[in-house]
Length: 107
Image (cartoon, rainbow, N blue to C red; front, side, top):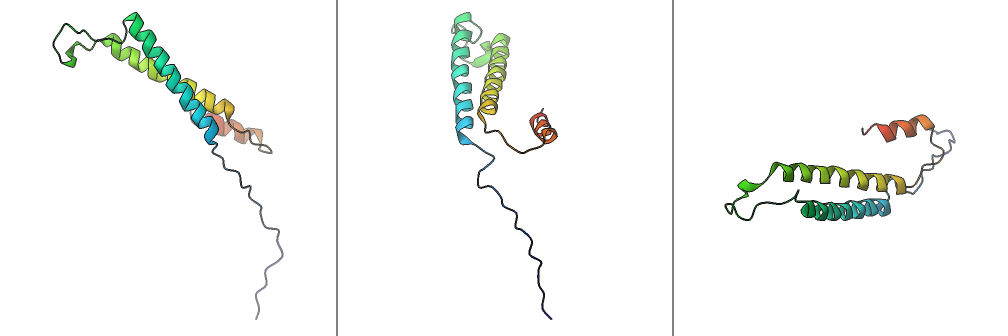
């Protein structure tokens, strides 16, 4: 008794990866650049400072400093993600509903 398989066309998978490192590096660079710029702006406005005249500990860490650091993180991460998303390679022959789901599933 012999087992034979029907001649079915093999599925061809593309050799391209879904991850492109160029846009990821560009997004990370943009996020780091914005972080440096916003930290300089915050230092200039006095939002990211600690009092040098108090005790040498970090008890003089102001609330404005904490808020400014959180704002810097949010803005830098948003810009880095936006740049990486805009520079990514577009998928062709993918249904619009799937693209919409994948783009919005992360929040």
